Length: 143
Image 1: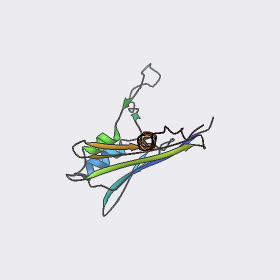
Image 2: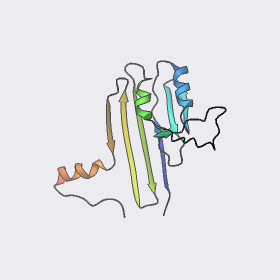
Image 3: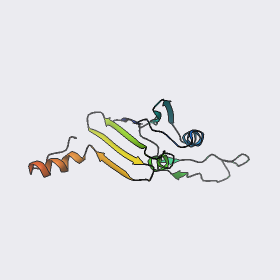
């Protein structure tokens, strides 16, 4: 079995409160923030290269990890969370791509504004688009 290797990042966007946004990013595992005159961007540095969708809460000081406490963590939605930090008129674009050797390729993008409205696309959308355009259902780019 081959490993999946991916990479994800955002465009540069402006946030309402940079300190609050930094605190949010610091709470995310394996996500870094970079900034320039155009705003800030996020880079995913997870093992699979995609933004995290789950976090494990830290065990409080004084709690015994072996005392039977089950830390299942919680699901997160980075795209939706970032939306809440965006300035009016800003759009954050998240993009990711990756591959498992040459078995298959994956790619996606989602854009979100500060109201939580989104538009998204996947590389796999091409199959439906091609079928509508040419009347033929193409085979998948995978084996």
